Length: 230
Image (tube, rainbow, N blue to C red; front, top):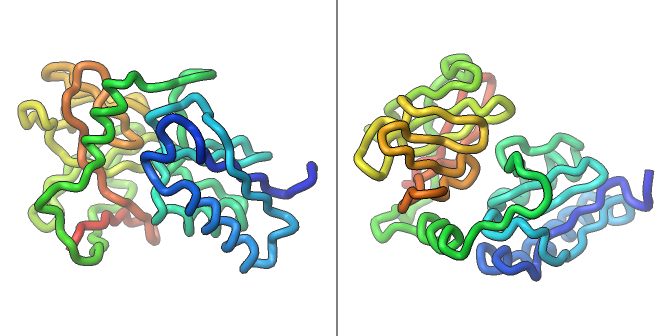
């Protein structure tokens, strides 16, 4: 074992990560959490430069596990801290697995589209999130997809093999059910006009001009829940 049981790197000075989240604050939150847990001697949280994965952030990398997280939001930090940094269990829903070794930067156009897709909608609810049961995890076949209705909202549940993803059920292009498409664990493809989306972030890929709305998801006792804004 090296000098630390867990060494955490947060991209704070890359080209895009600092614009996608307050990554300086991420560092403070994780350091404070490690200290409050009495693990300041075992856990090291460092600011880091660019990981050459621009557009997929904010990004955090944890060693010695060599686990990469992408699209991290401040609301995810508590789970990363308690489950992985302190508990040794990676947060599968946040893992970054692009399937491309080495540098994997989005183009400027893709970054701009991803930022637009993440921007809050003007009609977004302002109240607290309400967790709603969608289905049992067994209801979604391995490496498959299935559409459900939750309080009148059509939601697509995707079994990506090592994690589940919840997103809008219809393609934003021509409202074709995405359940009829395909995915490879990282990219979701609508077969109608071949629009593609990043499963992890919902960002548009290739010719797609609009991203997908994704929902926070959790599992309890074998059931899957999503957060609907109240």
